[in-house]
Amino acid sequence: MSTPLPATRPANPRFSSGPCAKPPVFDLTNLSDAPLGRSHRAAIGKSKLAQAIDETREILGVPDDYRIGIVPASDTGAYEMAMWTMLGERPCEMVAWESFGAGWVTDAVKQLKFDARVHEAPYGEIVDMASLDYDRDVCFTWNGTTSGVKMPHGDMIPAERAGLTLCDATSAAFAQPLPWDKLDVVTFSWQKVLGGEAAHGMLILSPRAVERLESYTPAWPLPKIFRLTKGGKLIEGIFRGETINTPSMLCVEDYLQALAWARSVGGLRGLMDRADRNAQVVWDFVAARDWIANLAVSDELRSNTSVCLHFTDPAVAGDAAFAKAVAKRLEAEGVAFDIGSYRDAPAGLRIWCGGTVEADDLAALMPWIDWAYHAELAQARAA
Image (cartoon, rainbow, N blue to C red; front, side, top):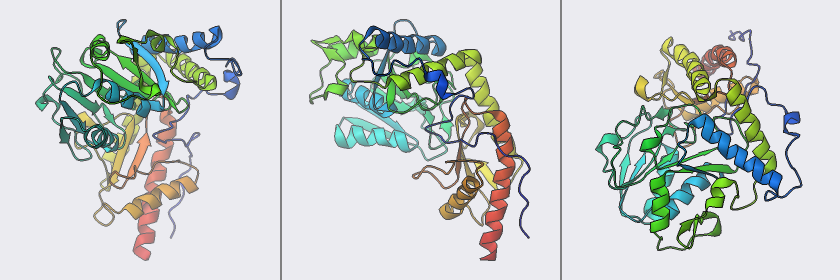
């Protein structure tokens, strides 16, 4: 006997963790003001880029003395730029609790060959951040996109520290509070919490990070797209919208539209509240069932953006083929796209709950997950 289909479908089935859902008001016609076919160095191009920087500062509450730059290659490019230009002056602490943090560890240890101590935690947990030596440079992710865990706060980072803190915040910015006084470098990309288009990264530098850039010259050559200084001084134009290479002005316009929508829902507070409500829909669903659980080991660590789940039924726990089959069944029904767990993560589901997702769509999705799980379980037992 087949399991009946749920009665309601999500209006928007896009729950991918990157690129993420566009804002609910997105419409291609809203991008008609993009200065296409114009130089990004023309007055109109520079004005749009500077506006993107200024509005990012306003919504995120970035301090006035921090620099914000638009850089190539998404969050990856921004974080690599920070590592290659600032690290190596002193030993560092490399922190990883999921795939992307592990990538930064690989770059630091195997590519740049820093004097580095590596601290790792399994999926669902985070490293004891209070145990780190903050007189070293510390590299970490704020929100583990592929593990569904986040930093609960920044209290463990001392205000007085000799080293720099380099924070990959791509799944946290616009959804979780970031303690700017504890962070010297923050990176993120447009395609995460605001649902922007890909390939553009944001690089935010504290005065201490700028001081490092101006006082330290790495021993290795830097490619052009990584160079942030000239003659020992910061290239200030990068942080006024004079980008290192050519940006897509269509993507810039899309980001500006997303920022305008963010203001319309209450700015940062409104975005965080939306993400919290969205994640709560999933958490409530999980709490009512004994066959699925949050990958995060404690409520304090649960991400409100990249919510990662795993199946706990002993019959299918850890079964990657089963988890993929559930995700594939949901996609075939057109109710959830791209919600399989990340390839390096434990088998399960990963549901994006950032502010651009509507809580009603998540509420409509939950019965479908129930349906897909039981349908796949019945099929597995019959095989």
